[in-house]
Amino acid sequence: LAIQTAVAGTDVSGNGPGTTLTVTYFNSLGTPLSGAPIDAGTYSVTATYNISATISFTISQATPTVTVSDASGTYNGSPFLASGTVTGAGSLSTTPTSFSYVGTGSTTYTATSVAPTNAGTYAVTANYSGDANHTGASNSAAFTISPAALTISATVGSKSYDGTTNASAQPTVTGLQE
Image (cartoon, rainbow, N blue to C red; front, side):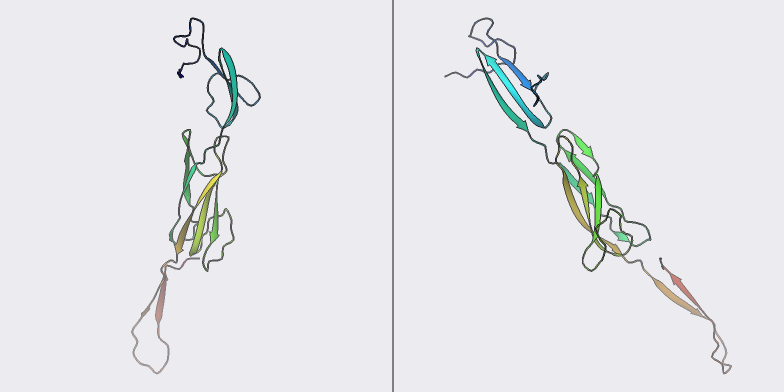
């Protein structure tokens, strides 16, 4: 038994002139394609060499890789936005389609697409909804928004005793955030 490989449309040596292998690919509707398919979907291929044989096959969607970078930091009154990337087969390189934030531990923060502002512990999930060639995928990361430092100091002026309780002091508060 000899197995011979031929490029579509070429003579297979040793079998006489005019004996060619023909390979034709079809989409799921039966429409011939100009070459081998590369996108996810269902296809068939017919090989003809003295006789014909047809088989069906499926190219499955690839699963992309989603990365998410946490948004940790110190409270500053602004939302702590995460970032992320989505990479995959066929040169897929994009950003997640959505982010979802939720409080963890003792932090109460209902799952939402709005990035948190207040000090606490959180989890963020980056989601990719998928496309014709890639399944949906997600990835999560934990992060912490630390409380801002608060400093309270008082400067007391000097006063000679005069029998009263009046004294002057100037308190100073720094780091207070709303």
